[in-house]
Length: 209
Image (cartoon, rainbow, N blue to C red; front, side):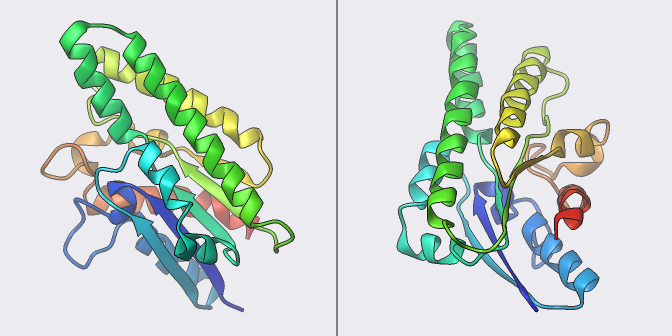
């Protein structure tokens, strides 16, 4: 029996930085599942580069997104990278760390709303799991970026207390490998980075499937 997988989010779900036709983490994860289960996995992607968590949350109002979520066994969400980039830019203008705190809490609140939307759509449906992908640090040389990224990832982990929700530790998968895993823009993953994301997701999700 095949599975249904819905990937929602920003440029990380789009696969920006990957080789042409190489796929991002969602496509690679789909391939891993199909190889392991010897069954088809239907992938639906709803993502756009540059989206903030406010904009990702708006995707859940679309009828095509809700129709795809209803039968899905697996749902992944990426987000908050663009929120944090905006907050860092605001911090650099005035060195007000409150902007960074507000961004991390705002992202957590939006992810919580997304989880609630999925739970509402999935009422009475078969078992499923939502995998929230935490963030790697493309700026390990900037202490304040590292500190607030850790704060964000901590806030995200708290959401795993919700039923059907797990957090995939992309940060750990990238730690110490940033030079090898980032694309030429030094922000988005390259093919190795997306492969590492897919493997982290697969290793965490396989026991649930």
